[in-house]
Image 1 (cartoon, rainbow, N blue to C red):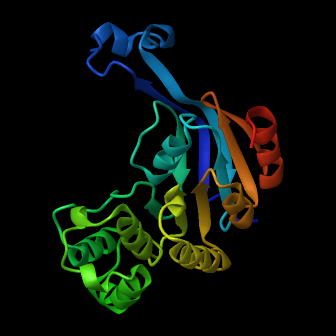
Image 2: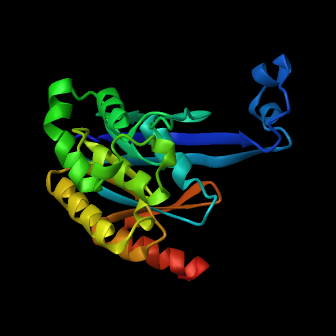
Length: 245
């Protein structure tokens, strides 16, 4: 059996509602009870799971229940306050529209920069450049600063780049809700191709049709905890029973 590609044990992330508050040395080196101060809350607490290579995971929950936080932990852009997450392999994250893209740089420069930061060589970028541009239908905006693009075009470019990376893990956070119907169909086809190549998918979406289409397993987050880990149909049925469809 394959070793887990992702292992999470006791994950906890704490945020502060009052960012102006400051901590004393007593707070930093005191016990857990002392460190849980007024104005702080746990976005995630005691979350544990394992993911095997090639699994497609749908992350389910209401807004503000830690779904995006979980993806950021897997991506390595956020560190847990408690527990640990071990990721065996690179991650291709599509978790924010502008994540990894520089607004003042052109689309052309952003393609080279983002692909290069994810480990593609100059030759590999050159070989895939036309495919990226064609997929995004971005030929007319290659020399336009990224910040001047519409939200839909930003998603097109970001998805086109990320889906061409060689990383074994793909993180997708709600971006399939943006864009026209024809482009979403292209994204769906590309995701199916990646899954056929045994890529591992983490998908955050409020669209149950998308979750059922791509995912075989679900993680249901509620009140900062992992309420259910099971087949996606069972997870969605539980969610709908508790919060409505």
